[in-house]
Amino acid sequence: MSQKQYLKILKPKTRPVQIEPWFYRYLNAGQLKVLSAIIAHADYATRSKDSFASNKTIAFYGGFGLINSDTKDYEHFQSLTQDEKIAYKKKKMRNAIQTVKNIKRQLEELGVIKREIINTKSYAVVDLEWAKDRYLKEFDEYFNDTQDEQETTENDINKELELITKLANEGNISKSNLKNKLESIADKLKDETIDAKDAKANIPDEDIEKTVDFIMNSKTIIEKIATGKIKNPEGYKKAITKQIREGTFKGAENYHNQLMKKVDTNEKETKNNPIEMFTEIYESTQRVDYAFLEASKGLSYQQQNELLEFKKEFELHLTFNKLNQKKRDKKNE
Image (cartoon, rainbow, N blue to C red):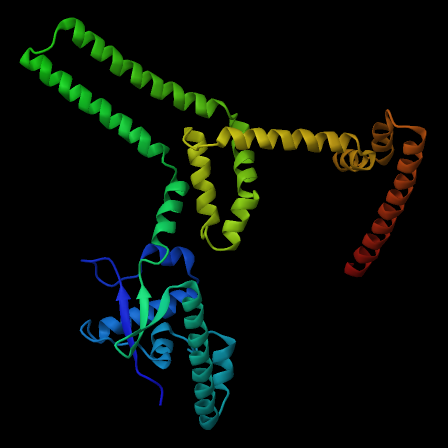
């Protein structure tokens, strides 16, 4: 007989048991279901009991093994006899329980659930502060702290204005001192406006979308999307676009400069590759001879011959495609 499993939940004090936002960010749907089921059962069984749900209970709470309508599984189930339906349900339940076991193992490997022996009792410790520090760090990086700095500056200016108003009303400030303080505040406001304009002006409007695409296609962002660190790529992209337009995205100019260098390099490579140049000109003009003449300019005798061979193969390919298209057209008549 297996040893009874008890439950222990590590959570912030004064907080009810709940799914924290970092779990939505870092866990997949199945893992979230199992974790939610464990917590839901603990609440249902009252918090005074160290009640760790069985695999069968978790499967029920998480909806594992359900036979949902409007699915092929449901259609197959409906076609069975009564005895076959009973057997099929039992099989689904066994698979569901095995799925729960596998997911619980995943949660243990991640560190969400840990095993502890306390006074001979075996506890499954659910840490609701798991990955909290990582989440808070990435939250700051994602939403950028520039806005916070801007709000701090605005708060400081408002406090200065309140103090100056109070001193002026009480008559405890000279006119010259009042003038100097007001000019200082005006300079701060001016600097804020200039910084924002400069940040935006560094990237032309027509390059903003290209810069955002460049950022989204960077190795770092692709890895974060692949590992689930960025769960909403489209929302992430919109946030970056907004920040660049507002001039609040740190490092935007650096990304733009990298993009421009890449564009220049690609253009140079295209110019140095007559076959690519030929293909690009043909795609825009649909004229083979014209594309050949333009791409041949400045080439050596050997390069011209190589391009001529490519042109011949290219024309054969076009002819072959046209013949196939005619055959398809006749079949469709």
